[in-house]
Every structure is written in structure tokens, then in C-alpha cells.
Length: 467
Image (cartoon, rainbow, N blue to C red; front, side, top):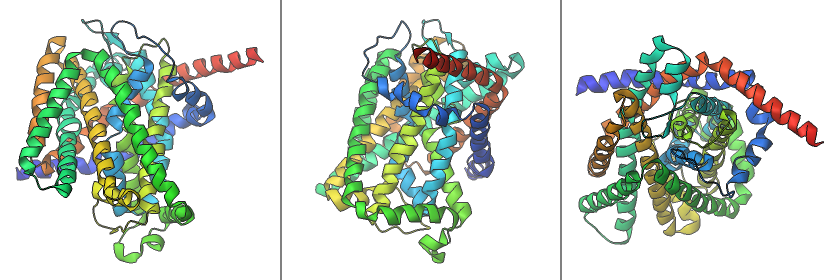
């Protein structure tokens, strides 16, 4: 066990430390310049053709989901406990300045996710059930050539295993901890029994959804994601406007703290600019998953005739996850005046305290509901990711049902298990997924650049013709 901890710690220091973050953000910077700053230059067009069309009625073809269902499935995985607990943890350990670096990573991450999704559509294929399948394992194997097929399999292996950790056990653990804690604050309960019951309920719910296949997952997430996002965003906005007088001081603490943390939190906390950058960039990257390669698996199933058009949903996805939801969490904590022990770890308890300044004990209920919806949707999406990775590795769709059964049983296990080591290993596996994916992204960049130029030249030409 001690050896496992040491090996995991070493790997984690690489993939989740400076080397991994530099590679992740560097890829986003590279794509931003090579694609002409598509996420900035065409931001209005992208928003108009993504969030602006969510109410359009569209039926997906056989073996596919609508473009909006695809982005909701991907958002279901990215918008999770990290948006509530992870952001506050970054602020506690990196100071308010971590928020600034979170924004920076997201701005470049938009182009990384754009490239991932574009490649996922470009290289996708039909499986023997007629479903569209794709993602890093496919665009690495098909795009880089047969000599790189093992690299695609490596991604699939990491993804299949990571799904049980970061997309399953850690999520259900957050659900049971939040719900049991909230109920226990009103009336004493047997926490262990409650956790088991909650785990069984979530496992049954997920099993029912998964039985319906790809389309049912898309149908559930397209309803669950907007609902949970609206509840959380409206609640956070109420806190924002309730403490609007603090906006100036908070913005100052963010921008000053990004470069001079001690001027904001004091020297006693021991927070340096290095800590602010690492915590902020780390939270941004691993919240929106830009560069990790998971979301393209969901987008590959979109019923679309344009890889770049679906790639635009990747830009929207990062914007919604980090620029909107993570920022609102940060503002709720910082503007509410909630006491923060800088330099010490923090999580959802800090977010609950911030919501409690405006909503009282109801704040805990809001966070519990938010965490439950966020984490449940994450479980569904990551089961899809793990299934697709297993399908690629075993070269058959017959692996789907066994994998899903095991996945649901692991939900129950995660509800009643102490997960400190599982969290660490899952974190490492999640980071390891990024390595083959980023190699694929950089190697296939000429294709993305070509497709992007062709598409937006067509858009520009269309605009000129309308004039």
C-alpha cells in the first residue's frame, strides 16, 4: 500500500503539477494563435449558434443525439463538485488571485476544447449497434496512423479506469456526505445507513437511465443540466446582488492577489504567486476538463454535419463551466464576507457558509441539491465515457452491459467507503488521460486549423452575401 501511495504521488506531481498544467495551457495558447483566436474573434457567433439555439426543436438521427444533448452530456460531467467545492479550495490555498488565473486558463481552454470536439466529429465512426462513437482514442489511432494506435489504447485504458474513480466513487461520496450532513443538521440520523440507502437509490436511478442507452442519457442530461445550472446560478446571483457593495474590494483582491498574494491575504498565510497560479490554473483546467479528452467522447455522438460547428459547443462548454459557474461560486464566497482560513484546505463547507449568509440554513439545502444534481449527472456522463473506452479496448459492444452493471455496483461501494486514496488515484488517472490526448491534439493541429479556416471563411462569405 505504501508503494502504491508513493508511485501515485510521483505520477500526480507530474500530470497534476507544473509539467502537466504547462502542457495543458500551452496547448490552448498554441491553438489560440494558430486558429486566429477563434474563441474571441467569433465569440458572438458561437454564443448565437450554441446557447442561442437551445430552444429549437430538433430530432436526432439513428444512433445519435442532438448537438445540445451532446453538450449537456459533456457539461454534466464537467459541471460537478469541483464547481462548488473545488473553487473554494483554490481560493483558500491560492488566495483570491487564484480566480484570475482560473479565468486565464479558461480563456485558452476554450480553444483546446474547440479543437478536441472538432477532431472527435471529424474522426468518429459507427459501432456495430449503429451509434456514433469517437474521442481521443479514435482520432489518435486514425489521425496519427497505425503506429500510434497503442497511444489511443493507452488513453482508453486510463479513461475506463478513471471513470470508476473521478466519475463514480468520488461523486457518490460527495452526494452522500452532503445529503447526510444536511439532514443530520435538522434531525439526528444513522449516517452509515443513510449513506447506503442514498447509494442504492442513485445506483438504481443511473441503472434505469443507462438501460435506455445513448439517447436516454442525452434526454436526461438535456433536462437535468439546465435545471441544476439555473437553480445554482440564480441562488449565486442573489448572493451577488445582496452584497453588491463589496464588488470593488473583491475585484481588487482578485487582480492584486494574482500577482501579489501577500498584499491581500497577509504574509502569515504563506501564499505565493506560484501557489495562486497553480491553484487557479489547476482548478480551471480540471473543472472544465479542456485537454483531458473526456468531453469529446460525448460530442462525437452529436447529429451534426459539421465538425467545426460542434466544436463551437466546446467553447460554450468551457465558458459556461468556468467563466460563469465557477466565477459565481468564487464571488459568492468572496463577496459574502465568509471567513476564510487562507493556507488551509477548504471545500463545500465554505460554499455552504457563504450561501448561509443570505439564505440561512436553507443555504445548506441549496448546496446539497446542487451537489446531488451535479454529481448524479457527472456519474451518468462518466459511465458513457468509461463504456466507450472499454468498447474501444475490447473491440466489441458486448462489453457495454457488463461494464454498466459493474459501474452501478461501484456507486453503492463508493457511498459507504472512505475514499482518501481513491480520490488521489482517480485524480492521477484523470491527469494521465491528458497526456495521449494532448499529443494527439498537437499532432493533428494542421487538420483543425484547415477545418476552422474553411468553416469561418464560409461564415464570413455568407455574411458578405447577406449584405
